Amino acid sequence: MEFSNINQIEKASAPYQNEMMRLGVGLFFMVGIMFYVATTTKGLDGNYMLIIAAMIGGYMAMNIGANDVANNVGPAVGSNAVTLTGAILIAAIFEAAGALLAGGEVVGTIKKGIIDPTSITDPDVFIWLMMAALLAGALWLNLATWLGAPVSTTHSIVGGVLGAGIAAGGFGIANWAKMGAIAASWVISPVLGGIIAAAFLYLIKRTVLYRDDVSSAAKKIVPLLIALMAWAFVTYLALKGLKKIWKLDILAAGGIGLAAAIVVLFLVKPAISRLADTIENSRDGVNALFTVPLIFAAAMLSFAHGANDVANAVGPLAAINDSLVNAGISAKAHIPIWVMMVGAIGISLGLMLYGPKLIKTVGSEITELNKIRAFCVAMAAAITVIIASQLGLPVSSTHIAVGGIFGVGFLREYLKVSYASQLHSIAELHEGKDREQVKKFLEDFKKASVDEMDQMLKKLKAKQADVHLPKSERKRLKLVYREELVKRSHLAKIAAAWVITVPASALLAAMLFFTIRGIMMP
Image (cartoon, rainbow, N blue to C red):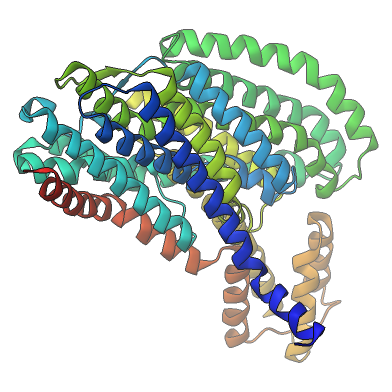
């Protein structure tokens, strides 16, 4: 065989070799879990079920890392505030730290009160139920990651518990009021996140980017925005990330956040002032001021996510462990350190092996993100969770982050179309040039700064630029603007994945429960 043919074969097989490497590392992790549990639970009646459950828990944790963590670091990567490798390292470290330091010793094994555990009297049936729920949630997350759809890991495990619970105890076992609240969150989470992110972006545009001297405006506004971010994230961490070890009400958490914000304001104001004197007096220059805050935001979101969502992987595993050790069923269970380690390591490993695909989807494939827009998304994620916590709304961090990205994209569309409409209405007053010239004029207008736009509009109004824009061309250009800013195909795919997550994982869990029961029953 010729060397050129060998090289071609090697090049063609490279992606498969990488995939085999990732698969091998994942299998090594799960086999390691199997050996550890088998060694430490020797003599425990039914320890083989715990071994299987631990492997499934590790698989679930890896899928959480591959899918859910992208929402924390995706905007920072998409805006080029941090490299993909840097984001993965930050997220892996802080996800594991959040899970181990603030994950807590006790977790509700029946996630969000979806089913009534007292309806299940047989410990074996309960173990099969939780095992089916865990495996169904993991399989659905794996499929969603493969399709490139960021979905809620919480909703995946909720659907799994619901489906397996109904299969085990009938429809009466489910808490349908809680399920209704979760269904409402499919709309509330992304809409609230989108509105808040868009509001912050519009605020920054009005107070900084639309000013003649953006550098001077940035000196005044950016320190306040960073201080507000400090308040939001410290309050968020106090309420959510550290709630297992230090429970605070909203006033206490907000007070701690306010103190942190004041300290941050005094620290960053001189630094921002110095930086603002060195940057280019443009929107690109202002963008650079948000690099460090975005890195901190990615780290804090990852820590809080690890503290909260590790329960999606280890909650059912803890329930199975507790049922086997105590030969009974409880609504809450003590989590041994090895169970927490399965969740923490699994999330970090899944992120490193399979996270880049979703990070790219969230960071760059929905809409174009710069550092300012990514900052607005991060702010929306923290503030929405704070608001929802006080209102008792079961929101999803995934839905909030993705909703925030769509929010900034649609705001940009609205502003672009508004500018274009203003230009069109003025251009109709003039007679003049062919479509190519008009398209060229609109492209220049699109790329211009706000001051340059004003000058171009004044020239049009003064008839110094003799252009005419036909109605058919206006409609076509508006569609081009919209398609460039937000990709509708991603919106449809992600929305569909969100809607079917609970029913899909529920149906899969019910099927798995009946399969496991058929295998395990004598």
